[in-house]
Image (cartoon, rainbow, N blue to C red; front, side, top):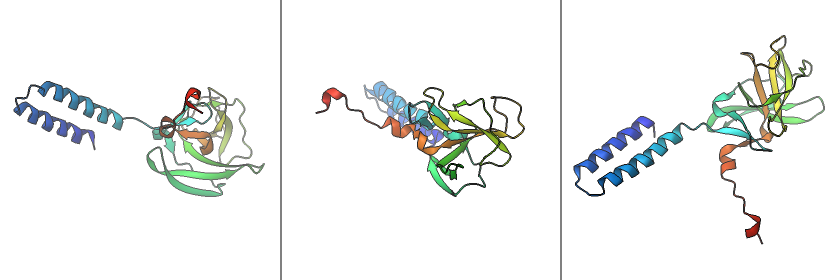
Amino acid sequence: MAPTAIWRSITTTIASIFKSSSHIKNFTILIILYTFTGLIADTNIQRSFLCRQCGHTVVFANDLTRVASDMSLRQRNDSLLGRKGTLIQLLQNPAGARFEVITSKRAHVTKSTVTVSSDTWFTGFSWRIATCPKCHFHLGWSYEPLFYKGGLADSKDTFYALILDNLLDETYADNLIITPKVYQS
């Protein structure tokens, strides 16, 4: 339900409560406002992917973008983080290792200081290894235009190819249940 429709519903409900002369009118209004405020707040929450190793927030849904590689072995669209049509590409490095990657405009990662222009999956771009800033787990690669001289700072054309298997949807992580050892038999 859209926030404007929710507010319309709230005002209609409150108006009907005011017409009654119930002594719990104020309490009912507070409950309704609390409930609907929570619903509106939930519509503004932005989902994200976490580092699968440590849980650090890596990328938000709004930062996902579509950068297709001519070198991809396979491409498919899927719904990720509540976004339909997210491009997932299967890429293979010279050693034969395969990675399913998604691309994003921004990512909360640490970029290697070493830039590599050979063996790139994206024509016209050099790459750097991107790791989790918290646990240093390999999350993917940062891509910059070949002759970019800005160092580690992102250019307007910088994007990230993130390894899908190394990321965890935070909604899934929030639903994991850990049983304390004291309750395990």
